[in-house]
Image (cartoon, rainbow, N blue to C red; front, side, top):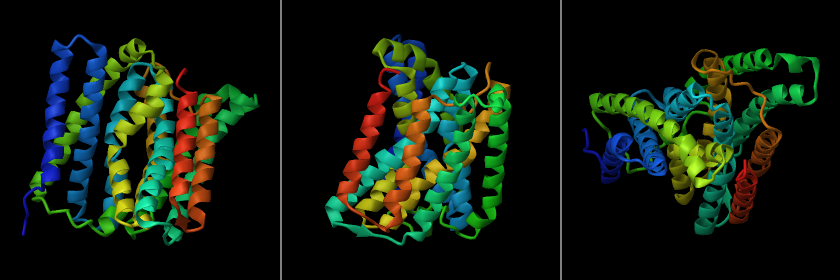
Length: 357
């Protein structure tokens, strides 16, 4: 039997549509770029939650493996749209920072909050390490591929004169790895979204036409709001005195990954550390394997300059450290609240280092 939307689902729907309308009206009637930026950011986060809920509902008809694919393909739509519009405006630095920030926010900030919340509520938590280890290993390998163009340029190798071509090659290889992993996910591999494997109890079935309609509507609104968000980004950050790098690394990354952030922490509070870790780490893995190479290739047609995988040194170091830390914290199959504190501390230190640019 089809159940009505829960209160929380109705709140998400009303917030997403309402904030989108307000953000749209602000483009015409609000003169403050800061207010327009904040409204667009809030609408973007709400739309990310709506798209995620719709994906979950559509995926209930497909099973856990295909749903994982659906989430990886569509769950990052808000961030994809932000990246496309930022590239169109020539903000390649913001895109690079947002991509790295998405990895950092999930591997350090969100994982740290989940460890802290779950550890304080339930004490030390043990989990089957196989799935988190697999995701962490793939993440390290993907990050390694992203490091190569930066190292080639910084070390002034002969490949440094062909950064764009090398970036295209790396992007193509990462996309091939992603495509070859699809059969593994379809068989219900560890990168499939665990939320679909075992519903949390407050999930209800939507009529399929409603789920598809909300998914299409949320995606369309996300595209519109992303354009407004990027349009207000540069003047707003100038008014606030915040660097564009910090904005991409922290604000854009957190707003665009609202779904995974909330779901992962919720699993930790429910004493499901295996689900929490896999949910949280699945997002940066998809960003490294799918979203980043897609934006690299799209930049050749949508932007005035190509997005390359040559990152600023501090960004690439932070990315490498985050990938290594993930392997360390999940390898023993146990976490404590103190590990969460350490992860949060590292995230705030990295974020502070980019406050000035």
